[in-house]
Length: 101
Image (cartoon, rainbow, N blue to C red; front, side):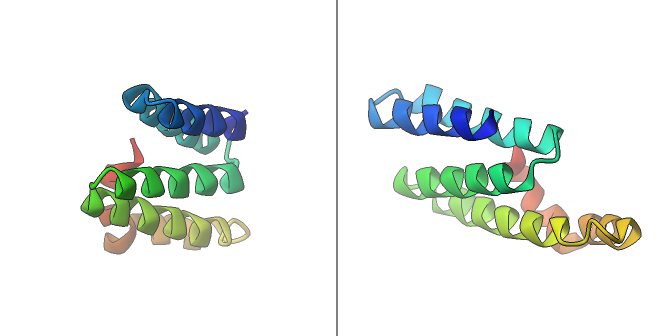
């Protein structure tokens, strides 16, 4: 479902409905996080980063890219929940979080 919402967001952006498209991409990322669907979440995060970059919002794009990569690393720690929690509490991970919304 998150991948479909991400694709819908990309289509809206392509049709010039930029605000709606960005909102849909962010919804896709949030949905993926809610159901712990890591790959769709990364795809939505990277799509968001690409959109932000193309919109001239370089700082936000860099943060979105960093967050997507950090989330990929965090998902690799699923077998050791304490390590994952420590990683997610780290300054590095937390500094990328403002873009998540």
